[in-house]
Length: 206
Image (cartoon, rainbow, N blue to C red; front, side, top):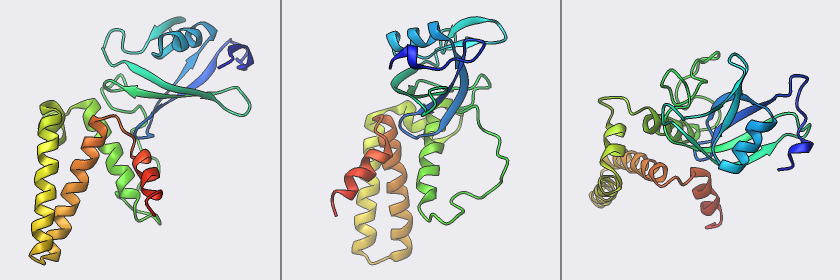
């Protein structure tokens, strides 16, 4: 990234949109000056400029919720930056995975013309569970137990799919496939592998 080509505003700032590189969820909107941008590029961690405190701040320096930078891009006008990150904990000071939690247009999970929208929404929900670790959540339990437990569940659900199909039980098969898909998405998240990469590979199988 060529810093001199970035168009900072009259206050020497440029808006920075932070996005989860795996789930594609927008995590926060912050601002950078030339120094914080340079530090972000050098350290591969997000640094911002606080307009209220008028000082630089490194995301996660006190909370531990750091953001490792995967890629950075600026828009066609070069006056806004998109930062793709691997988050280590919640992005919001409230403890939420994303600062953009409040909906303006209400809709149900999976509602709309895209019948596969629920898959991407589930991916975002699992990403939020990983970041926030709410007590009592089964997804939290899986992430805290780690890769061995997740792989065990994937194996168990795959076996259940096989049994339901072999026994020709369509209703049971439906639920077992859903459980398998859920655990596979948890696995992808644990491995920091974007679902988009899997979908791209799937297209090449045709």
